[in-house]
Every structure is written in C-alpha cells, then in structure tokens.
Amino acid sequence: MSTFKPPQTDPQSLNAGPCRRSAATRIVLLCAALLHAGAAIAADAAQSSMESAGLVPLKLANVDRASFDPRSPWAEGATLIIAPVEVRFSSSWDPRQFGTFGLAPKDIEKIRGDLAELAQRTFAETLTKLGTKPAGDAADSKVLELHIKIVDVYLNAPPRSEINPLYTYVYESGEMTLELEVRTADSGRVLATLYDRHRDPRDAQLTLDNEITQRAATRLALRDWAVQLHGLLRQAGLR
Image 1 (cartoon, rainbow, N blue to C red):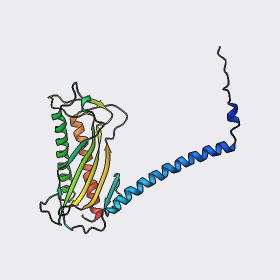
Image 2 (tube, rainbow, N blue to C red):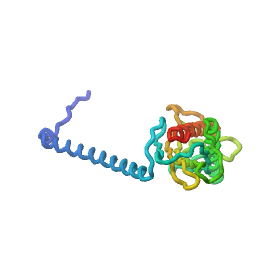
Image 3 (cartoon, one colour):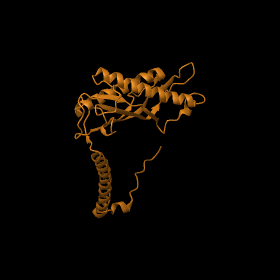
Image 4 (cartoon, helix red, strand yellow):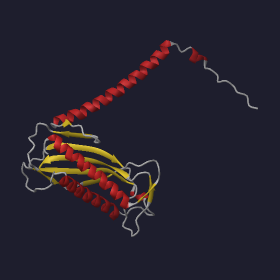
C-alpha cells in the first residue's frame, strides 16, 4: 500500500515577503508594457508608411486589410485592366513530399501557371457579373490597372502530370494570401490596396482531397476576393 507524502514547502518561499512579490509584479508589468510599446511602434510605422503614400484604412467585412486614397480623383466610368497575376509558393511548402518522388519541376510550373490563369479569369468573370467591367487597353486616366499577387500558396493535394489524380487525406486543402493593388494606368499611382489571408475552412476530420476538389475550393476563394474588391471599388468611389 502506497503512502501519500505531502509536498515539502521551501522555507525560503515562506519568507518571500511583499517586497519580493511586488518586484516580480513590476517585472511582469514592465515586460507587458514593453511588448505593448513594441506592437504600438510597429503599428505606428505601418500606419505612417501607409499615410505617406496617401492611403487611409477602409473597413471591409471578412478582409484583413484594405485602404484607398481619398484625395485621388477617381475617374468616373473608368475600366480595369487585369495585369498578369503573380503566384509565389510558401517557403514552408515542400513539393518533394508528394507522391513517391515528389513533384517534378514541370508540375510546379504548371500549378503556378494554372493558378495565375484561374485567378485572372475568376476575377474578370466575377467583376463583370457585378457590373465592374475589366476592359480597356489605353494607358490614360480612364483606365485602372489591377495588380494581383497570390503569395504564400500552400497546397495539400497538388495536381501532378500523371494520368491518375493524386488522392490525399487532408484536414484542409491549403492556404494562400492575396496582395492586390489598384493603380492608374498612366502613372502607376496606387489608389487602393487589398490584403487577405485565406485558409480553407475544414472541420477537424480527415477528408479525401484531390486536384479537382482543391481547384473548386481555390476558385471559390478567388471569387470571394473579387467580390470584396468590388466592394472596395464602390466604397472608394469608383463604382
């Protein structure tokens, strides 16, 4: 039969009077104050950088950050040119972990090209349906350029060049981040920005995923971003 022995109390801890506890409290409060000050300094620096470019924050639902230039004379009835979309993969995404030998370089470049093309087409189709027609090719004040970057792309079930699709049990399809700028076509002046990180919403259950389901999830996220862009343009005075 085991015998319970009460824990031994350190006599020195009994002598830790109010002065010692007060000093510890002051240290904790000082650390918290320094962390808060550091965050405030970083926020002020970001705010100062944005203000120096003439941009002010704009609140949009379900978007991490948005801004626009209220001093800019937005061209009434302006059209949009969608510049070629840039795609960059996450530094933590390792294409060698898929399949027996990993993804071939041609597979990686195909994924990059397909995602860029899907983003360009989805934005164009969605904006057209919402009444913001992405058209025009003259570099004048009536034309605005839409620059889209899809960065930090992480795919859990990437497509391959093999005949049979790759099926993978995953908790989510992946994630990606949108970095978007609206610029004047004639001068390249930034009139509005949109930044948002998307992570495929899934529950805590494994799901059988492949390139078809992943493409559908990606297209849905791109469409949502295009809708948010339309809202940004409306609030900023373009539409």
